[in-house]
Amino acid sequence: MAQVNSLKYQRERELINTRSQYEAIRERYNTLRREFEKTERELLPKAQEELSLAIKSYKLRTITLLELSDTKRRYLELLKYRAELLMKAHEEFSKYLSLGGKL
Image (cartoon, rainbow, N blue to C red; front, side, top):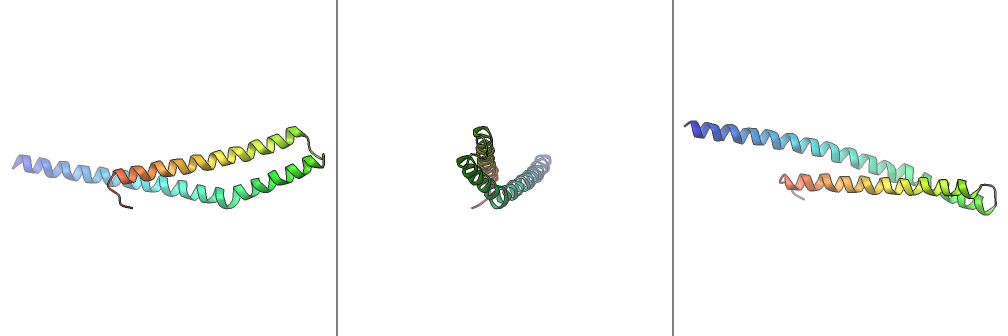
């Protein structure tokens, strides 16, 4: 009887632990997804427009090569940030699947 009670307690503890892990993963995934969507919808188009304008300005010799390279660097950093967000979201989703989630 004591062993049955011990197993029931262990099962409940595992369920609570799994649920808390699931909730934490879900929250992190949703946060990453919102940030990724914001980057795609708002930040990236602005950065592309800024880079395009900087290239045109450089061709017209209104900005220096240093200013153009700085704009390119910011654009590339934003692309890198977007890729990192996507990678983190994939990692969180794989953790969800390892807990027994379904596609």
